[in-house]
Image (cartoon, rainbow, N blue to C red; front, top):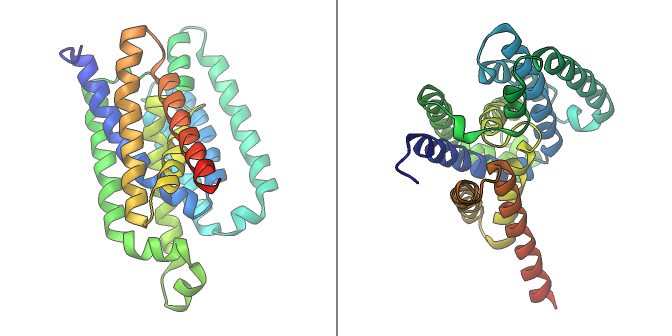
Length: 265
C-alpha cells in the first residue's frame, strides 16, 4: 500500500506533523497553555472556512488568523489565563463566525467542510506536502534556537525573569510556534480533534520519561507511532485516519495510567 503516491504523501505529512506536535505538546503542558491551544484549534475553523469562501487554501487562512491570535496571546502572557472568561467570549464569537462561514460554504463543497472539521490526510497533495515540510522544519529550527531559555522559562518563570530571560518575547515566539503547529495538525486530524495531537503525546512522555529530553523523545515517538499505525489501520479497514490516531494515542495514555497505578500499588 505504501507504493501509492497518496499514501506516501500521507505518511510524510503525518510524520512531519507528528514530530512537530510531539515536541510542542511537551511545552504546551509545561507552560499550561492547553486552553490557548484549544482556542487556536477552534479559530482554525473560522480561518479555514473564511479562506475557502474566498478561494484560498484553508491552511493559509488558518495560519493568518492563528498567527494574529498568537501574537495577542503572547503579548498578554499570564493575563490570558487570568481572563479566561473574556477569552472564552471572544472564542465563542469567532467560532460562531466560523460556523456561519461553513454554512455558506457547505452547499457546494460538503466534502471540503468535512475535511476542515475532521481532516483528510489521504488528500494531501504534493504542493501541500512541501508546505507542511517547510512549516515543520521552520518550527523545529526555531525551537532548537530557543530551547534552553524556553525550557528554563517554562519550568521556573520567576527565576528565569530574575536572570533577565526575555519572557514576553519567548511567550510571543512560542505562541506563534503553537499557531503554526495547530494549523499543521488541522490538516491531519481536523479542527475538532487537533487538541489530541497537542496534549496526549506530551502527557504520554511525562508518564514514562524522567528528564525533559527523555520526555520530548517519548512524546515524539508516541505521536509518530500513532500516525504510522493509524495510517495502516485506516487503509486496511477503511476507517477515518483522525479517529484511528485519536484512539491509539488515548490507548497509549491509558496504558501509562495503568502502569502508574500498578507501580504505586
